[in-house]
Length: 281
Image 1 (cartoon, rainbow, N blue to C red):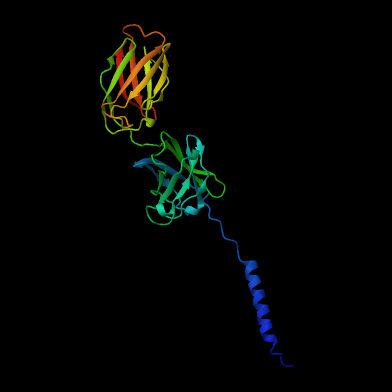
Image 2: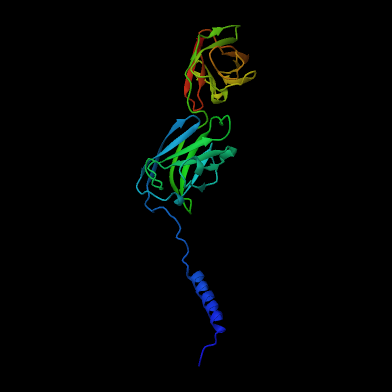
């Protein structure tokens, strides 16, 4: 018996659909990219490039596909949402995270250009606000996909990265309850938002507080007295620099007895002492 010619295209079409369905049914799902269970990853740094912090992978026992990782950044204890690590080297592949409302760009530097996260690679963390946010304590995290387990972390002070060198001139007693402290030298004009101050009376120190901004004053309590410190921005540039001055005035309580040791100190954002002026009451 001869086959019917009209049925041949129909049979072929049916067979094609069956083959296509079979292919759809039996295609294996993609294998998720994961990091080795016994992965060890250490970070070091940061070194600073302008306002950007550069973190280096100092040790990694397995070069790994970057798609196996998430990254996150915290600022003053509040962490951003973890996002997939960049898989393209350089700023063009960067991701943006926003801890505590501050946006930062994170890009990956594939130092050996092997397409994998490996030893000596870098992460560059750049604040996107201008000027950059002041005085943030930042922590950078590398996490495992998909469970978010910690792989590596590094903490550091952010904001303006390089502390200036500051020298005070000799403290000058004015009125009975007033001391004038000239700024003799500053290596680079510095935003006061990065600076802190305190006052010592008879070796008892007040709390370290933010430096007052221009045309404002800050209160310091120590030794039973209430003092006010003011900053004189003598060139009106809104930065601390040579030729500026501080003034410390007692506003409540008794001035220390004659000969009492007193000191006014200026600190960097991490409480490192930049300069101290001392005198006797």
